[in-house]
Length: 525
Image 1 (cartoon, rainbow, N blue to C red):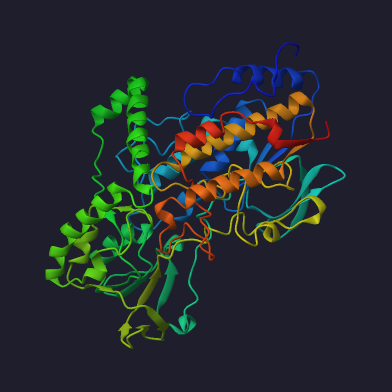
Image 2: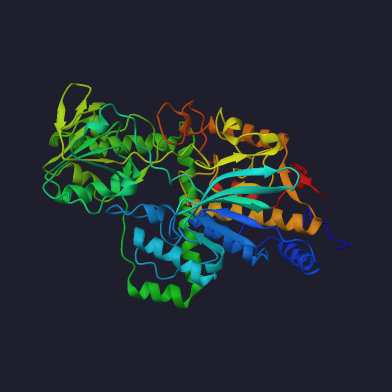
């Protein structure tokens, strides 16, 4: 198109008002497709929130050849897997939803799991995704075919039958919270009682009158332990370190509020924006040795020390690390639960499991009937268990042997047209991950549109750009509270901060507002 530089005529992310130029790129892409340009065939791995967002936005942009592979029998991802009692989001409902797909009638401030799953399921009908979804199909591996310039996916259906299909683009929406982690504790296989992970809750098992032990006191346990303690005969919490647990202040939205949001969408948008900016302001807490962090730590200690007079130790209540070094949790019923008769907090490390219970480092055996793991997920094993082989036969696991890293959290040199959502250094400790996913999807959609307009076969991020971005992120990470001495899922085994974005989300949105094609090698032009 004469007179227009489509390498620059692109816009910001999905959220908010579009930057001038995005509509020009949309029109140019549609015109090129209408004139006979080849539409890329896109494989999206996973039908959770990220996968649905990618499918919707790609199709909206005119890139219709999208297939979403999902190994389960339905959409929802982590919100389909995690059905433990009390499961709910810790981001306010109106922000834990897509800006382009509002839900004005959320039932409460923090939506429970069934309502979030229902919202994600509703997107299938709302955006007519039925034909794009392929359930009961697992992607086992992906190999870049140099000659064809495409990805060859290894597939396995529910019956175990294997096949292979070719795609121009692969978008991994596997997420970080889909592979439960159970620590390798000596003797675990000898336990005579019932064992399960919170993400694989055994709803057929009755906990009433049972002696229940919980290993791993984090974001999931904060939600399910109060429900377990209400029915169990006794509950023993094996806690490695105390958490900062802030008030949740959850509440039901009155009918009249939901009606106002439905009738006047602009009011809901203003409310959503107010949530976003309040959460965004909390990033100050993530700065290393921040004044706010010191004040918050002192406030927690002051409020919690009186509870030690009621049988709880300081080690069970008061964290020995600065706020934000680990995920700050929210709950209205956590501390009352710790004070319940029959609830014990054990701070001695777990040594081993026997047929009858758990033995801690002090030699005490704690008799149990059921053992529940709230130990989270294998969050630093990005893209697992799919094996990716890129240009020159390079294995992605080998590239990441010293820690996962990706340009903008999206792409790795040597793996053309492979994009990942919720990739390395894109997790948040203070705001909604769906905001980040929208920015990532907006960026990759623009990049694919650029390929269509320019006649490129694929795009491979340049090593220099990826190294520059990683250096910036890790330099910034050293100035955050996550670099303190605490152990958390934000880091890999070497201590490298591989999960979190190290700045405000507004900075991330600016970085992804428009692809800079100087950072990319366009193949086949």
